[in-house]
Length: 112
Image (cartoon, rainbow, N blue to C red; front, top):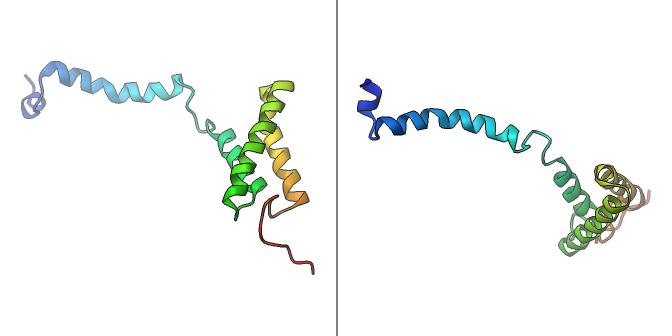
């Protein structure tokens, strides 16, 4: 029996299993589709919702979230799910061009 097994509080079968757990954890993320870009659409959509509603208005952010959700749902239904990231960015760009503070922002912009 190896010295490693004698020093540890578990049996040999458990150590054999525990040796392969880290390797299994390295394989699982690639099989489940977890990768560095997995949450990109979620981050872009949530940032778009916050900007649409206004960053300083919590009720506006909730209404902005509902509006972004409806727009992305319609876009994915009519144009396909490949167009939703582009639609979220287009909506963000449109809101920033029309009203940079958000649709429900309480702060008025200064005209110089």
